[in-house]
Length: 197
Image (cartoon, rainbow, N blue to C red):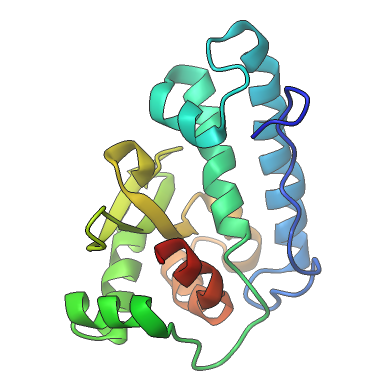
């Protein structure tokens, strides 16, 4: 929800260099401190004259279009993205209900990762690849262009990889698939599981 009518830049739950070498402090500085801050500033500038003033990000994303949607969607997407990470770990895998659901639906965690990475690598242009859940708990991998979020389809977003070039270009240049395959090392599965449960 906005504070005093204004949305705020989400605080990172880790140090700026905590995700290295997967995501460099330099990339994080530009991506979080400049790109996301711009979306926050833009949305705050658009809201006073809109019917969405005072609503939550989720409500705005579900109902709006045009510039309001684009900026609100990017804030929501980035908030979920930046808060789902932690310092790199080898053999980083989910546990509990989410792990069971992934195995039941995709056959194995490795098969899920392969499909998720493929959807991220083959998304044309800029956007996001998501793991989301429906009301029955069934999992879906969706490709969303630009500021898209599966919440607009009645799904609960759980995990997302950003495939806009600004998310990875400083560290990986045009090697989007390499970036996607490395991100698994920094996923905070406790956070993702809490979104599912």
